[in-house]
Image 1: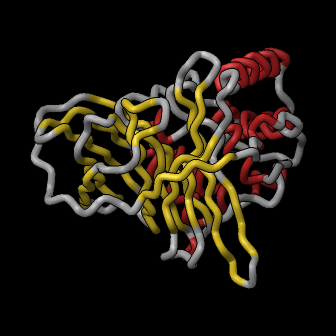
Image 2: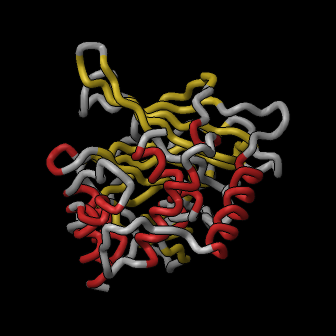
Length: 296
């Protein structure tokens, strides 16, 4: 399992995903700005067998590093960081709960159901949305991004399961996962997930105040017609507020905290550390994240 995927997996395990971290609230009616055409989301039906998140081989070590960094964010040492027995047991129970919640139901295999071309990055690049029914009958989602590098080479990555099936994520009317890749001027981001089929418009406010509204006409989720797919290439943008409309009525809203926005800016400035050991605490990304937390 790659470092990037290990980090994404731990975020999934600890329920720190875009669809759960932003504050969700209901608001009074508001008038959306003139909508743009719907993003060109293509309905597909392809098998998806790369279930890397069920490979638990690296999960314990990665989890130990991440949790210790969060628990001791004020100091950095060269000593190995170890989990207490209590935290190990808590992590074990959480992993078991996560695995049970995201295991496909009998007869339901994960399939890629929608695709968004990312040709502005490089021709042939794409973002896929994967969906399946969990054992509890709820919708599970995952995303897979493939970036063409040229000369026939490509790089892939994605987030672990998210959506209504994952405990603790609080995916409500707005159930979108935000992901970014690259660093510095190469950093790019996207958002993918599902919205209620009854909703008509989604207004996005970006870091800096720019607002864009999109019509919602993506494909419905097979087997879950109450959900509609939404996918958008955000480029270098960071979405700070989402507003969902049914007709002229504002039915749901999510806002990112200032802390989340500062941390996302760090991810856009600095690459992840090359290793997960004590040296990770000396990386520019760790220093930026530490400073972002101290400003709270």
